[in-house]
Amino acid sequence: MDRFLLTGATFCLLLSFCHTLLALGAGRYRPGVFNRVALFGGFVLLTLDLWQRGQAQGSCPINSLFDVLVFMSWSILLIYLLVGPAYHLSLLGAFTSPLVFLVLLFAQLGLAGPPAQGRFARDPWVEAHAALSLIAYGAFALAAVAGLMYLVQDRQLKKRQAGTLFYNLPPVTELGVANARLLWLGFGVLTVGFAAGFMSDLQVNNLKFATSVLIWIGYGLLLALRKTHRLPARRTAYASMVIFGLTLLALPTIQYLSTAK
Image: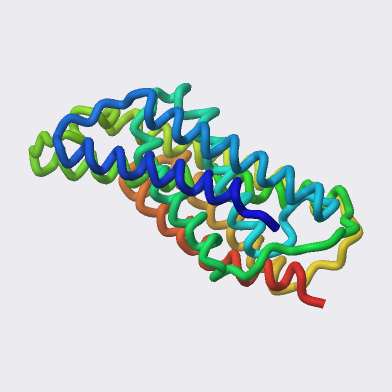
């Protein structure tokens, strides 16, 4: 299948990433329209690519690890475009673009395997479960990015280093709130996705189910500790990055068990 749209989306993310690096290196970074246009362009191209492959496969295009990585990249950009302006996190896009670029590059290089072909008869509840789970992972990815921004700002404050990032990053309190809210958003969507999975008649591999439940419990426990003030914002930021990293590592296993006969 032609990957022109996917390559174009990857290039848009690369442009955003390079523009940010050059501006920060010159000490004159200001959140502007260039990054927003590049990210929106990447989102539009990914949307068209997903639609095209969905038509070819006859189902939601999440039938291989390649598909999953592309869909998750789309989810990350979707959540950013929805919540970035609401939280006034204009610099969030600068931190998001390298993450999405690397995920798309990994898929483009073929390390995840070729995209699935043919038509797939799928239970709509199963498709809803898979799609919602990946959208939740998009929210968790942005929570991890917000956590990284929090740690960068916190480090600059503690060392009393007022660099270019210091004057462009939101206050640590706002970053802590954004990190927590993105975690809640992801956890809520993931819970709905689990509910959709239970509505289906699909027999689930025990190891896949246990892995998915561990991810759900991990984020739920993190939020419970944060809600009861047993985990400060700084450790929440760290934990959100660690859990998302483990989730990324678990994705190949989950996908393999989802398609294993």
